[in-house]
Image (cartoon, one colour):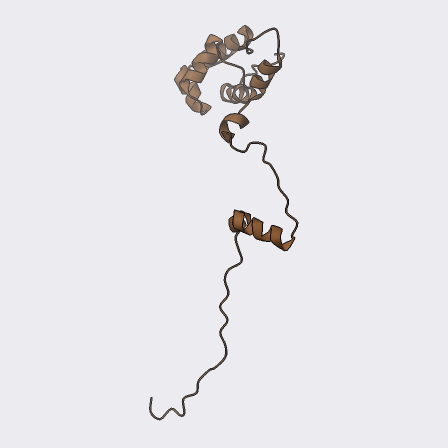
Length: 142
């Protein structure tokens, strides 16, 4: 580097700081105790589903709630005879098998078997998919 000129030093101070504590670090026991000693206000919130299986508790469907609320008749609604006959007739008119129809509406073939045998619990979403796929009105007045 000869010939470039005098070499100078940069003596500016460099400040290195720690990152701000994350949300998890702010909630740990040490941080909470330190905040208590400092006199900071601490809010404690109890979660309603804490310590439970969230998926199991949140999956109660409308039918399950109705069944739980019901005191005398302890059974779910089933597919009415008129609906199951209408589904079968519309499917036969289109010359489709249960498996083909199930594939058209993105459901399992077992679902179609249950609807046509009357064992399924009626789901308005599936019935509307069937109406679209079969181009037929299955609910209400014809």
